[in-house]
Amino acid sequence: MAEAVSTGSEPVKSPPELIVITGMSGAGRSDAMHTFEDLGYFCIDNLPPSFISQLVELAELSGSRLKRLAVVSDVRGYEFFSQLAGELSRLKERGIVTHILFLDASDEVLIRRFKETRRRHPMCAEGQPLAQGIRAERDVLAGIKDLTDFVIDTSNLRPQDLRQAIRGRFAESMSGEIAVTVSSFGFKYGVPSDADLVMDVRFLPNPYYDPALRPLTGLDGPVADFVLSHSESVEFLGRWTVLLDSVMPGYVMEGKHHLSITLGCTGGMHRSVTLAEKTADHLRTNGYRVAVLHRDIGRDRTA
Image 1 (cartoon, rainbow, N blue to C red):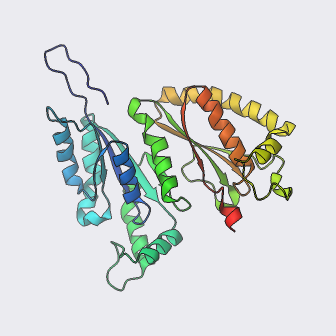
Image 2 (cartoon, one colour):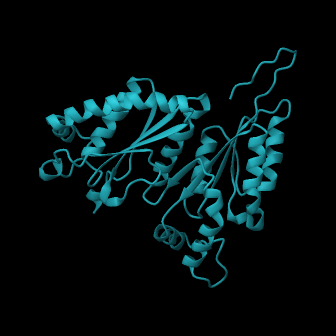
Image 3 (cartoon, rainbow, N blue to C red):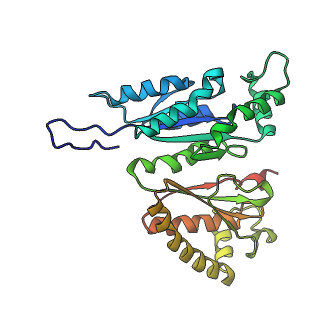
């Protein structure tokens, strides 16, 4: 974030940008914070909400080099967490650019992760069922989730996928440009909950039924050639790119920081992968900064 130049002898410092990372325990908050550190943010974990304003004031001091801040604030703050909404409202009234990143996952996935790590859930008393603690945490977080700018469901994401998704959302927003994530997925594994645009490409010819192509993915040449050799695919891409060209300027004018475009086929391994890559190529050609994520590309193969 650049410094604004005043008409006097001293420059007027732009207010810092603040990202608040919150969400369900076990949904990837630590991985998210480390990603923001890699992006150049000054990060603090488990910061009580009442201290966020003090951190911003430190960043605003003359000579401070803190321009981008990321803090993790969640139910580990116990009764102090209830102050978060009020603190963020006051910061926005002061003109501080504030975004809330909420990380979520299904109850089943959260239970599995806690069992694998053998960590204690912060909302669970000794001997209390883990599922009960997760339900209690959802109740506490319901209000702040309604205020959230960005929700990422990490149920089916690996840590590297989460990092890529965060980079796609926030890395380019630092320069004021819209950041686009184009992803493929399999409908049988569920539609991504954070998608802005969802395109169903299951109507196109399916390479899955060719035994030679079945073990490959849409990143492999033979599969891509199969998908793109059919007239249905050619016509779809032509109409799809015209649609994107018509809506993208509107998202930019609206001031949207991030756009999530998802294309889905049955298993998320063949058609949607090829067409997500073609979509990303088209957007890059038009000057957009694009990250690509193939959520389910290996799940059918593993199964």
